[in-house]
Amino acid sequence: MAQEFKVTPWEVSGIVDYDKLMKEFGTQPLTDSLLERVKKFAKGDLHYLFRRKIFFSHRDFDWILNEYEKGNKFFLYTGRAPSGHTHLGHLIPWIITKWLQDNFNAELYFQMSDDEKFYFKEELTLDDTTRLTKENMLDIIALGFDQKKTHFIINTQHAKIMYREAAKVAKKLTVSTAKAVFGLSDRNNIGEFFYTCMQSVPAFLPSILKGKNIPCLIPLAIDQDPHFRIARDIIPKLGYYKPSILHCKFLPALTGPDSKMSASEEQTAVYTTDTPETVEKKIKKYAFSGGRDTVEEHRKLGGNPAIDVSYQWLTFFEEDDKKLKRIYEDYKSGKMLTGELKEILIQKLTKFLKEHQRNREKAKKVLNKFILKD
Ligand code: TRP
Image (cartoon, rainbow, N blue to C red; front, top):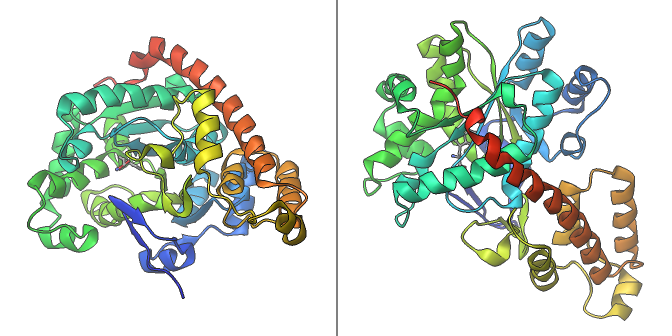
């Protein structure tokens, strides 16, 4: 029997049925013919997160490509709510964003919603979210975004330009819509109701700053889609293009394929600041295995990559299709044991994190240059 699952901007639980979710949310599948067009614009290259349909769904992405074809360039927008250290799952939408920036020569507006986590997390103060904003920005810069074309918007710091526009959105959003879309109730605080207006603004703020209407493309994990259902309804009423969305799947939690990683549960995630020893320990101890109970059985029956978290994680981080296919086949046939598979993942992540942590250190020197000048 199909399990219940839940996907909202504040909670993801259960085994997500992505086809069902697309139907529920009313989004479109990212088809091969759309991806062919992306590939053409990217000089024959298609990012592995597209190739593997980890980015799997969209709203009006065809329109963005049509406009681009006509010479009407888009800007990119995505964001991060600073609630804790960055984990590997957070990086997925940002990795594709960087690739899109490079291949489409696009400006990026990156929102740090420090107000959001202050409203939604009882235990966090504004000082906490300010500190975490800085920490998280280092992870974003470390991915290699172009300094000249990347602009952080920090909600509380950029209030001067943000508030005017958020007010325009707020006036068109009723409490009953916010309740219906987000499942908020009378017990939620007023900031939680208002917040979505702040998340709408960067989808049209560049049009205001540049004095002309510019298409907007938002790569995100699909739990964030509800915000933009509202935004897409309201923004055209303010005279700007409806933003277009690209949705990705969630990196499964280390402890099992049935949930998103949580920044508050240490053993479910690998953080960008984890040491090689910690990475090794976490994967060996917690990574949910699709292997059999005994080596004998495993050799005979083979492992199950569909539920094996180490294999799943490799689909998110191993760029080489051939290598991945070999791992899949060897594991499925029983030739490769869980321990060996985990070792491959440990090597991959350790290498990735070593480089990331080096870039993260360097990012400290240039952080201020990335913050939008207002
Ligand atoms: N609400 C997002 C989160 O909880 C952060 C965010 C702000 C965001 N603006 C965005 C995410 C735009 C995707 C796109 O992490």
